[in-house]
Length: 265
Image 1 (spheres, rainbow, N blue to C red):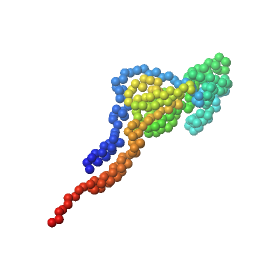
Image 2 (image 1 turned 180 degrees about the vertical axis):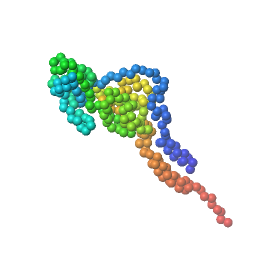
Image 3 (image 1 turned 135 degrees about the vertical axis):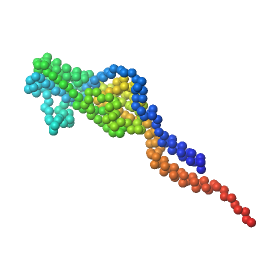
Image 4 (image 1 turned 45 degrees about the horizontal axis):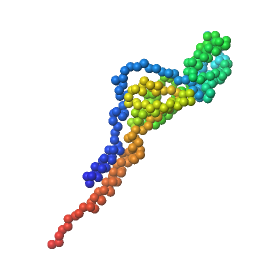
């Protein structure tokens, strides 16, 4: 019987082995990292972006023709209505702007587009000293895989880090593979894929530290989760299999016992 118990226990432990701290903890070398200056490159405007463009002057009535009408809902602006009232960026990276016609947004950030519109309004004699503000309305990112709340999230911050994005998704589950997070990014019709090891801090000095609009974050399951999914799903299943094996092994073992015979007197 003893060899059977050893075999069963060994299988049980192998299937339910725990991950070590080095596989779970984030940025474990952060205390040894030196301080560095962060450089954030503002993302350029992309196709299918929705822009909110506001123009104002010292004389408010003069700027009215250069603004889309806004609809107030409750105590503030409804985001869905704001999107409908925004400027949609076409596939050829242009918008149709009130009074100025077709404008190219190619390779421009929202700030650079605001400067370009302001210059045209001044140089063409539309307005005197206008103030132009451009804001992206539909900035979003997607998190898939081993996180507690996978999905697509909107954000309004000008800068959002990868760790903040993961935090919005409820953090990784205990089964998330922390040393190979995939970040998929598309800019100017080109796709880039980053592989990020969250257990160390070197990635925090790279371009993957900040999230860009439309980024996709993928968290794969770790080896423990993959093995358990491929063989047995949970501890209850292991215990059931073990009890069945024992109920089979014990009777078989007894059939092999040789009982002593009593000689006839």
